[in-house]
Amino acid sequence: MKTRIAILAAVLVGAFVFATSLRQQTFSKLFDLRGASTPEATPVSLWSEPTTVRGAGLSQDEVNNIEIYKRNKEATVNITSIVYRQNWFLEIYPQRGAGSGFVIRKDGLILTNNHVVAGRAPQISVTLSDATKYTATVIYRDPANDLALLKITPKGALKVLPLGDSDNLQVGQKVLAIGNPFGFDHTLTTGIISSLGREIADETNRKLDGLIQTDAAINPGNSGGPLFDSQGNVIGINTAIYGPGGNIGIGFAMPINRAKLMLTAYETGKRYGRPWLGVEVALVQGDLAVELGLPAEGGLLVQRVMPGSAAEAAGIRPPRRSVVAGNFQLNIGGDLIMAIDGNAANRTDVLSRAMQGKRPGDPLKITVFRNGSRVDVNVTLGELEGTV
Image (cartoon, rainbow, N blue to C red; front, side, top):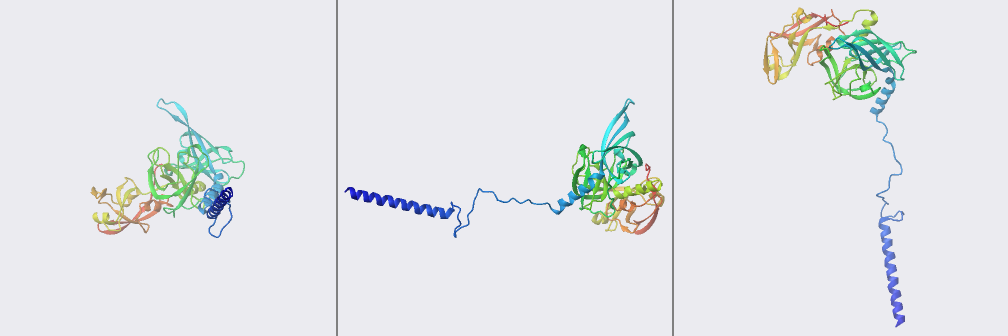
C-alpha cells in the first residue's frame, strides 16, 4: 500500500514539474525574457532608451542666421548719450539715452538715428563689441529722415558693414536685426518685411515716409541699428516701433538708400536736401474707383495739395468735396495720379519709391486723370523744410 502511494506521489510531482517547465518555455518564447532571438518575433523593449542619440543638426536658415551674426556683430555698436534738457522751471538737467549704430568706414564713421543723439550739447559714447569705448561727435544730421553720422577716432582699423540696395525690396523676404534692446547688447532678431512705403510721425510730429515695416522684434535701444537682408547687407536703419511700449511685431526702418544720399552729400561737401512734392494721396482701385467715376485701374487720388509746394506750383488739382463711398470717406474732385515717371501708380508706396534717388530741383513727370482724360504734368521737386 505504501509503495503505491509513493509511486502515485512521484508521478504527480513529475507531472507538475513537466507542466511547469513546459509553461515557462512557452512564456519565454513569446516574450523572449532571455534576450535570445527567435524566428517567431523580434525582441522589443518598452522601457529601454536608444543606444545612439543623434543631433538634429542646423537647418540652412539657422546656418544663415549664425553666419550673418558672426560676420556683422563686431561692426554694430552701442550708443549712449547724455543730453542736457530744460524742465518747467528752466533748470538744466542731464537725461541719458541709449541706442544702436553701425560702422560704415574703417576710420570711424558710424551711422545711426538722429533721435538717438538729438538734444542740447549731447555727450556721446560708443561701445564696440569688444567693450572698447570711444567718445563720438555728430558730424552730419538729416532730421527729415531721422539720420545722423557720428565720428570716432579708433585705435586701429574697424570692421564695416556692407550697404545693400533698398529700392528693390519685396514683402515677405527675410530680414535680420542686430541691436541693443533695453541695454542687452548685440541681440539678434529675425523676421520678414511686412510692408513697404509706410508713413509714421516721429517724436516731433514730423512725418517719416517710405519706411520698411518688419515683424523682426525691435525694441527701445534698437534705434539706429542695422536691418539686414539674407545676404548680410544693410538694407535699413531700425528707426521706430508701433506704440509706446515694447515690440508687438510692428517695427519700422529707414531705407538704406536714404542714408546713401546723405553720405554722398557729406562726402562731396554739398548740402543735402530732401525732395518734396507736397501732396497727400489715397489709393483707389476697382469697384471703388468706378463708383467715383474713375478708371477701374485706379491710382492715387489726391486728397490734399500743400500750399507753397512743388505740386501746387505745377498745377496739381486739389479735391473739391468729401464723400462717403462704401466704408471710405474720401476727398474727390481733384486729380487722380495714374503714373509717376512712367510707372503705374498701383501701390501705396509708389510715390515714395519715385522720390528715392531724387534731389530738390529734379524733374518728375506725373500722369493724372483729369476731366475724363489723361494729362502729363511736369513737376520740379521742391525741398522739404527741416533738412540740414
